[in-house]
Image 1 (spheres, rainbow, N blue to C red):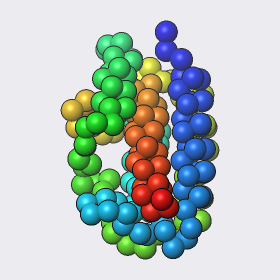
Image 2: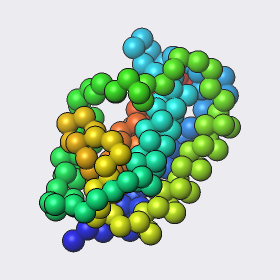
Image 3: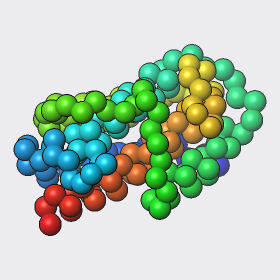
Image 4: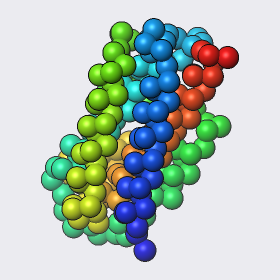
Length: 170
């Protein structure tokens, strides 16, 4: 059985922890490169903002009846994104620009996205397939699959943000 309430609860916990960790950085650390080849804390956060805002639009966009189990890709999505031993390459459209980010603006936007997800997931038909965009590898996903993607993708970058915090502060 698909439990979208559990997924929403996990999304909320993940966003709250992400916001807590981001809040822990001093303002001058938000744009600091912790090590060669890494994003700054601001860029990691902007990547999540770009990704989640795209998924919010997708979940609010056109859909159609699903001709397969609506959670068929959930296990693969979770397995891939929660494997912290593999390095992934982001698609160009969600690569954050190298610029100075404002911590308060990032925090506000994260909170707004969390609110939007809490308005979408309980009321939308999560079994429908969103047709507005095909994800690389997976194709069109259901809202259930997108919610799981948001959860584990954000968890993945929360893990990254914690590593950056430890590198900068210890």
